[in-house]
Length: 88
Image 1 (cartoon, rainbow, N blue to C red):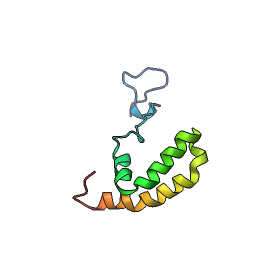
Image 2: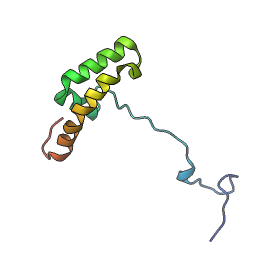
Image 3: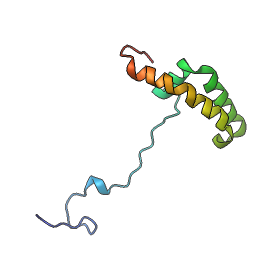
Image 4: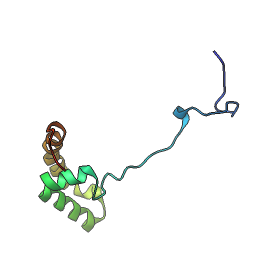
């Protein structure tokens, strides 16, 4: 087996395992599937959570609303993942 040192640039191509990029996904974007499902299945909880975050500007102060949203979201996401003709 050929020995190459990827750390000292003796190889022509770096391994993808050494990449340290972090890709951020817009999870809370208005058009994200997660947000659309929550709007359909848990509109009250989502509105209360967003209002609290806007008012306090700190998500950690809105844990009771986040917990309520997560409890409502569990069956909503299960429904979206298991129903073959679910539209969001």
